[in-house]
Length: 244
Image (cartoon, rainbow, N blue to C red):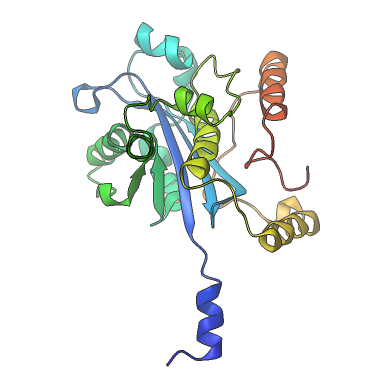
């Protein structure tokens, strides 16, 4: 028989999920292509907490023109970034043992595990990944399942996605994922508690464990303006700061 205290604990179990995306030099991790950016967003009970992980990575190789046209990350810029081996511990600490929400999970997991294999580190089990492409195909048979197509279906504004970026795509995927599971229905008390905690806790007292600077170079005024326009165009964006 479950006692009152145990029942109360069970009622407040926190479910942590990580929205994850990567940018790469190409499509074949076993043929020499490498990760150049990782972006992650933390969800707890389907609510974005504001904790993110974003890191550019030196792929230790050239940047094919086709890949550059997708994400705009040049060989020169990436040459000053840390190598995957330098950030592996921080990345693995952030994702911990929690569920990974990925659009086309086989692609991203293949690259992550190829990088880990180069270090003789254990692979991240594929069973941890939830593939939103498969979710979309099951929910909307025969329909397009690309991230852009799902943004259109759910009326999520992605007008400023002129280039792919791991963190930006994770932000969009967070919106898409919550729609795929039935729409956002967060616990209002949880939301209010998160907002109060954010207001009362000094920024320096609440560091994000294992996370480097969100962006290792200063964003241009054009990029800042475009990103602000993107956020303002989305109603109730899940990653908007709790104090906004």
